[in-house]
Image 1: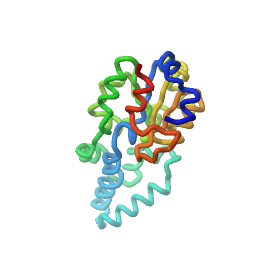
Image 2: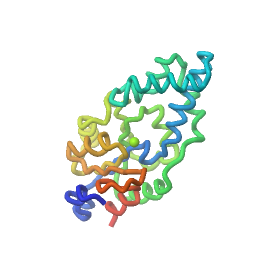
Image 3: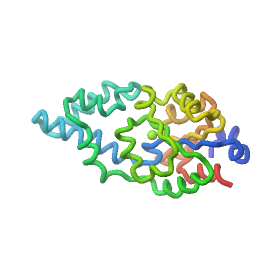
Image 4: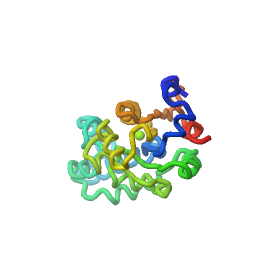
Length: 223
Ligand SMILES: [Mg+2]
């Protein structure tokens, strides 16, 4: 556990004041395989079919288009935007075709079911609802509320998004713990408004500032 977190997240203090535990979805609960399949396999395959070109060429073109928009822009996350932009029709069949690639990290169900007894659990994700509903397929019952920054607030996971989320739930940022795998969107931005943020590093780089799985988070939140 990080020095940074330890400084302001003493275990007893944390347990006493926290009401809500907020989770990012992709890379935090859900392994990257599903998104990889949607964005880098199924969409290029459909594009190749529509344009009558080779799959390899379609992958290159689509990846270039993703890069051109970039992950700091809202459109990058918006599957409806991409289907319009690339003239691919409706996204539903593509999303459905990737369902068998959906896997959770091993500790997820156990941690969620333990924490759900004591805290209100929510999702704070930058993934649009169309995809988020699929991502949460097997764990939806643990969450009292789902916040998609893109679908509900038309923004990335900015400090303003986190504040609005707290206002909607009628809690102070200091009563919320958030965990996620993106340093900016899941750690720096929520921290900026006073949320107790944890960065999760699934790659196991053993950064001082990060936790490596959700069991570590659980040990902070349960006596
Ligand atoms: Mg993530």
